[in-house]
Image (cartoon, rainbow, N blue to C red; front, side, top):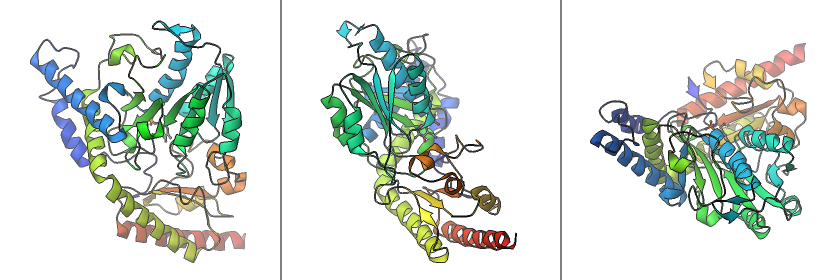
Length: 394
Ligand code: PMP
C-alpha cells in the first residue's frame, strides 16, 4: 500500500518506537512513585520528554501539560478556561467573569467546535469567523468579532483538510488588544512548520504526537506560565498529576515517544519540509497537466508542505478512491470520513456540495518516496479518465 493520508495519522517513526521500548519493559516505573529508583527513572524520562516537546515550540518545560492528544488539549483549554473564569476569581486572581464571548473559525477541528458549542448551550456567545476562499481567516472580520468581553479566541495553526496556515501572530495581537486569550490548535502544524509560542504570542497551544511520527493517544497543551499561569480548572480530579490539571498515571512510553518525535522533528523539519513540498508540487504538476480541469484548494502559498486538496469536478471522490485500491488517500478528514454531510471545511471555503464530494485529500510525509508519487499520479490519472469515460456512457 502507498500511504498518502498523513493528516489522518503518521507512522510512528522506528527511531521513536525504539526510544519507547524500554519503558514497556525494564523501565516500567510510575513517575509519581519517586521513593524508589524505578519511579525516579520514569520521572527523569518524562522530564526529558517535556524538555524535548518544549524545545520544539520555544516554550519552557513547565508550560507543557501532557494529555491524551489534541482533542483533550482543546477541550481542557476551552472548557477548563470557562470553568476557571466563571467563579470570578481563580487562585486569588480576578478572572473577569463578564467575559462570555468566544471567537473561533468555521474551519476548526471538531475538538474545538464541539466544546465551543457546548459552552454556547451554557449561555456563552460563540462567534464563528468566516474564512476567505483560500481558507485564510478574514482578518477584518476577526477584528470586528474580537470585541470587549471576549474571553477566548480559538484559531488553528494549520488545517487538517486543506493545509492552510493561519496568521496566528496577527490574530494573537488582536486578541490581546482586547484582553482576550488565544488558543492555537497546532495539531497539524507542530513538527511540519516552525512553531514558536513566543513569536506567535499564544496563550494556549495544542499538540498531538501521532500527527508528527509519534505514538497515538498522547499530546500536550502548552499553557503560558504553566498550570497556574492562566485561570484554567481541570476537567477531571484524581492523583494530582500534571500539576493537578490532568490527573491520571502518566503514559510514560507514549510521552517518551512524543519527546523523541519532537527531538527528531527539531532536527529534520526544515530539510523534510523541502523534500515533502517538492514531492507535493510534482504530484500536483503532473495531475494538472493530465487533468487540466482539476482545482487545488486552500492557500497555495500558505499551506502545509505535505498537503494537497484536489477537486476533480464531476467525479465522485469515493468512486475515484475505490479505483485506487492500493493507495491510501482520503475524502474529508479522518474524523468526518463516512459522515453523510460534506466536509464543513470545504463548504466554508465556498465549495458547493457537489465539488466537496469531488475532493480528495492527499497527505505526503516523511516516508513518501518519489516512486510512490509517480505510481500515485499515474493511478489517479488513469482512474479519473476511466470514470469520466464511464460517466459519459451513462
Ligand atoms: N486538531 C486538528 C487540526 C486535527 O487534525 C486533529 C486530528 N485529526 C485533532 C485536533 C485531534 O487530535 P487527536 O487525534 O490527537 O485527538
